[in-house]
Length: 155
Image 1 (cartoon, rainbow, N blue to C red):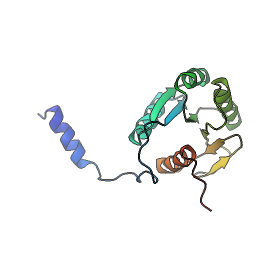
Image 2 (cartoon, helix red, strand yellow):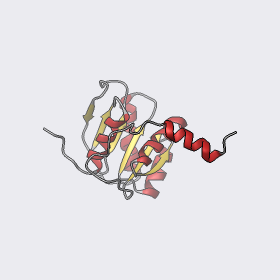
Image 3 (cartoon, one colour):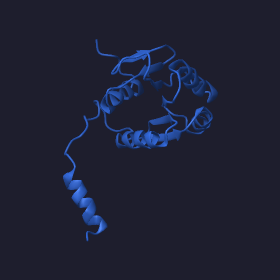
Image 4 (cartoon, rainbow, N blue to C red):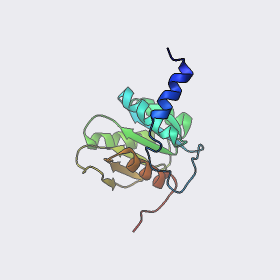
């Protein structure tokens, strides 16, 4: 029987050396906070774990009201919204979260969407609101890095 430390060593040794791209031209910045609004607990927890690896502080919310309360307390640098529903309804909800929390429009809002946008695409819809359907987590990471660090889109 393996002790818990030995089991961790076995698991750690079997992991691939590099499973993700390196951070984009920056060190992890733990001063940046992201509010993740996701109605499915397992997805919310997964996003939290992945973003924490990059050094972000994470606040979690399960719905609009929870998100407004959390944003008022935590003052996030970016809001990531992934809620069930029609894209148009989710966009309205995301904007209401930022407005209800009385955050400035310079706080970016990123909305996961599965309808009306192609896989791997991102659309800026005004007022620092972006709708995306990333192919993978690295694509989302690049978008978040660009928005949080005000990096312009490469020509």
